[in-house]
Image 1 (cartoon, rainbow, N blue to C red):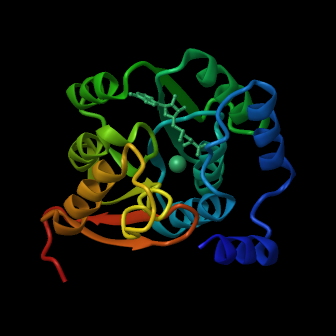
Image 2: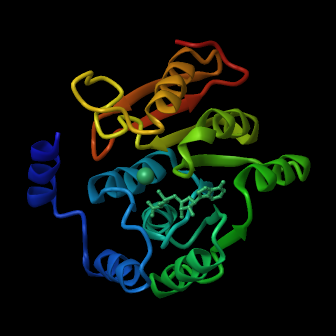
Amino acid sequence: MKQVNDYIQSVFQPNDDELTEVLKSIRENNMPEISVSPNVGKILTMLVKISRSKNILEIGALGGYSGICLARGFGKEGHLTSLEVNEDFAQVSKQNHIRAGFEGQTTIMVGEALDTLKHLRESENSYDFIFIDADKKNYVNYLDYAVELANPQALIVADNVLAGDTVFNADLEDKRYTEAIRQFNEKVASHPQLESTLIPSGDGITVSRVVKNENRE
Ligand SMILES: C[S@@+](CC[C@H](N)C(=O)[O-])C[C@H]1O[C@@H](n2cnc3c(N)ncnc32)[C@H](O)[C@@H]1O
Ligand SMILES: [Mg+2]
């Protein structure tokens, strides 16, 4: 997997100067270096463009890397709401969003994502694209909220769904969240309101299209 990702990255060069600056700010602020892989970032930008999504929800902001990739998909028309529990990370993320040219187009909501999601549901918010990339133990709960908050035909994407290949490779030692991710993947795959697949880029992403008020094909 690493070889494949390195090859894609070396040929397609998804990390430009702006994104490299984001990664630098994450290192300088002693934050965990767990942004999406550059290949996944590029897929996010392209999925937002292709789906013409304008109103995006992200669960897990960190330093704003994936947020910028998502916002690049909607350009000057669109809004990103990003949920983050860590106040300091939220600040770094906000600064990076502004530096990348998205001032006024992103909102970072600080707090436990499950609390914020409940609030968003109560305020009847809805989104064209939802990206899940926070604490893995809550992925199945985030999925429930994502389906509820999704517009018809929205996309739901989740990162790290291979859990460093531990979800399928019995020779590797499980991570503490391997079982949570297996359950998440099974729930996504069998969900009656989702049409889904898994793309093995980076640490793996599930991509789901919400099927509301239409026949599945
Ligand atoms: C993997 S990082 C996100 C990376 C980011 N999406 C990117 O690729 O640039 C996960 C983030 O989720 C945040 N987080 C973890 N648990 C959370 C929770 N319960 N509620 C909200 N945010 C949480 C962490 O503080 C961390 O910044
Ligand atoms: Mg991730």
